[in-house]
Length: 452
Image 1 (cartoon, helix red, strand yellow):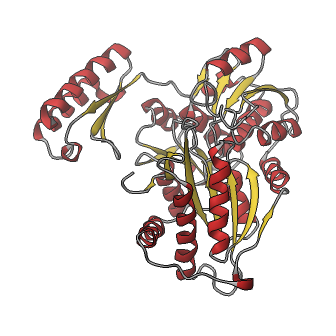
Image 2: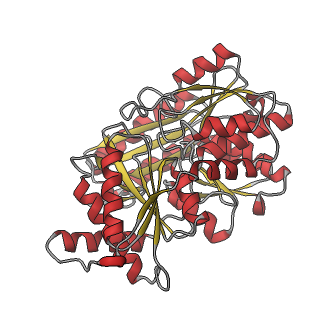
Image 3: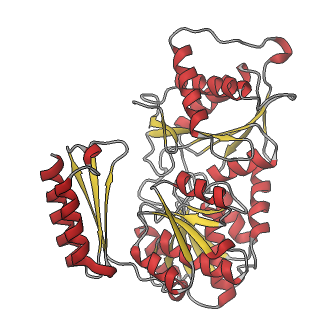
């Protein structure tokens, strides 16, 4: 698998790449590393462990719980809950560590392990590196120090987590959702219980699809990566809007009453104006990645708001928000972070706030999302090239400069080396789709010629 920790924990095919032995070993390593860092000093350590409904999550959860308890950590098993719920409970219960077992939007055979630090924040890179190093050293024979007797961890279920998380979500809402009919696509995932409960308690009339997880059907033709069923259901039921989550419900995409998609950039734009109106958008600033649509940037400028852009990945968005105290950030894919109320992307919270804006304003989601116009965006992956030379090739720089001159102020070019594969991603935006395709094709050829 190469380096175990990616931008969002450890992922792989369950029982092939990600085995029970690995889950147990990583959990023991995490406990030892946090103990060495002083996290457990002066008290008995406690961890919160949750999962999405994947079948493999059952044995991986058992391995993680066993690993933590064997290292002297008391474990609260919260069962099937969204990633942001596990992060929230890690903070609200004063736990030293949170563990979520999920591969998010990936297909069912995959699974993953994500660790949260005290407070529900993602572990720092250096701690992940240390956990991986300790795991590898012990995997190759170095013995663990093991507690015995009363020093071993105790394990119990914590069923109150469901209601506590729902109450947290409802406490954030600025107004109720009475009068709105909303279709929820739960991706047969971790929010299948929580999300409908929260929307119904907030007053909405709820229609659910993709809300019958069986351990095998997560993300299968439904959820935020497959919106066709949601689009059809919204139109069929005459709903005001639809909300789609991914498998672990840290994402939210939407559909307006006509069945048109509302992506993460548009959701951010709608929420930014709403939060400014409620005086909770600090510094009138939104954080997003360099992959955000140019139309999003132009819309914020027109509305007098500032945009700060980061590298691709919600962890980089979050780092920028925490460093400068910004309240709102996210990605086009639907990861939206409202930092005053969540330490990670929270799809249910995002959907509730979006619906609350519709209810309070009396406007349709289509009208609200019209604050920005999505410029046509073309993405081409160029494989089998030397991605390390993207910034060094004079020929490629000349080709990019020529493309930028052609596009002018209404277009944009981005060349991005993949973080995991030997390829370069070419992204072009333009006011006209044919122009975007033409420029992207020429730049892809230039990448092949310069870096092949």
